[in-house]
Each structure stands twice: as C-alpha cells, then as structure tokens.
Length: 334
Image (tube, one colour):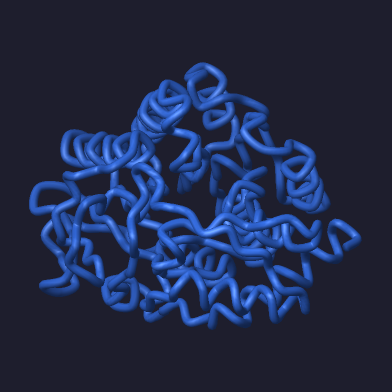
C-alpha cells in the first residue's frame, strides 16, 4: 500500500483528499493542529469521518513544531507528502499577519525540511491563485509573473513557492506547487462566501456583496480539485523534461507550479442567483465597495494540468452550489 502524509486533514481540502486516497487504497497519515480560526467542531466532524478507516492515522501538531512533525513523518515513512495545512483567509491576513508568517512560511519550511531528511519521492504543496496579485492579463498562466502580491496571505504563499524551489534545486527533492482557484463544496470553510451566504440567507440576514457585484471568480468544485491533486501526485517534475512551452517547469530544478481551476470565470451575481435557486429563498443584498487587497477577477488557464494528467475540472457552478446546499441542510438540519 502506498503511503502519503497529508498536512491539514481536518481542513476542507485535506479532508476531501484524504477521503479520496483512502478509497483508492492508500495509507494516509494526517497532521493537523485543529486551530480555532473557524469552528473546530466542523474540523472534528471531518476527522471523525476519516478515522472510520483503519488505513488512516493522525498526529495532533502545529507545523511550527519541527520536532513533532519530524517524529510523525519518521514513524510513518511516507513516500509522498501533500502539504495543505495553512493559515487561510485573505481578509484575516489584514488583522493578524504574523500568524500567516508563522504557519505559511515557517510551517512550510519545516514540511519541506522533513521531506528532505526523509528523501520522499515528491512534495505536493498548496499555493493559491492570489499569488497572481496585480496581474491584469487573463486567464492566469503558470508562466506569468507572480511578483505583485496584494495581501500578506498571498505574499506568504509566494514565499512558500520560493522556499520549495530552492530545496528542489539544492537537494533534488521534486516539488509541485498547486495554485487553487476559489474552491467550494460540501464540508467547506465557514469563512468562505458560499458558506456565509447560505447561512445568512437561511437566517433572513443580508449578504455583503463587494464591488457592487462586479466580481468574477473561477469557482472550482472540491471533488474536481482533489481528483486533480491525486493525479498530480504521480506527475513528478523531472528537471529538463517539460511537457510543452506552457510548462512552468524550472530550468534549474525539479519544480513546477500548476493551476487548478475550472477554466472559466463566473460573475458573483450569477453564483448568488444559483444559490437562491438551490435554497428557494431570495437573498437580501447589501452592495458594498471593493475590500482592501481583493481583486475583481480570477480565471485559470488549466492547460498544464490537462497536459500532465489528462484531467480538467468541469463541474458547473450551478451543480456544485446545489450539492453544497444539500450537504449544508443535512449537516445543520436546516
């Protein structure tokens, strides 16, 4: 049985990836700190579902604790590490920037240092579409410059990419960074728009819509996202072997970054319309100005993902929203 260590298995994406890999016959070891950035009962509920499998084990530890992380990895001996744990949230980074540096920079350094020590075959780690920052050219391509971050969150994620590249160059550890685009779906994070909007609409409260609704996002359904990650585990970057001119493969290291998006941009107001239809309830809309650090649009060019795996996310946002609402009503008895 193949062995993978996943950081952040009590989190939204980590939980779904662990569930998928367990179903595919992997041995999975999770590392999570159950931080209280949002309701930990949701994290415990996710973890409890994973613990029903005898192929799942877990360590309670912060990424900043190198000794605890090292012990967990040495005991489990993974062939692959998928690093998904992070201090998330663009807006919260304006309030508490230090937590992002601690978790997303120091924590990422610790993960890739452990990978180096163990000689793992591949490190797959989460970055974000936020690294594209002030870019105005769309869709975003992995070969575009990403040196204008607009938030501390984006800056720490870009720092993680730089650390990983240096390790790949110096020690030959293959590294693949994943730039996620607005992930949503069942078991999602309560601080994300879909979760917040659903709760507010059901409670008869207004929803805040920034930039007057003139916002576009490349909404990526969670099942598509984790399927892409699972396939990329075996798309190990090899120095000097790009798959085409659009490959972000480094010229000096077994390192690349890959967009995971739905290859489309959807207007936020259309997304809200789909949510109203799924709930059968109209929203009370509170239109607001653009928030500091936010961007008007994101849109992924996912050709590289297709070239590497043969897979492209394609779940329509109306279908994804309906599935989320079904889960939300069931989980919260609404």
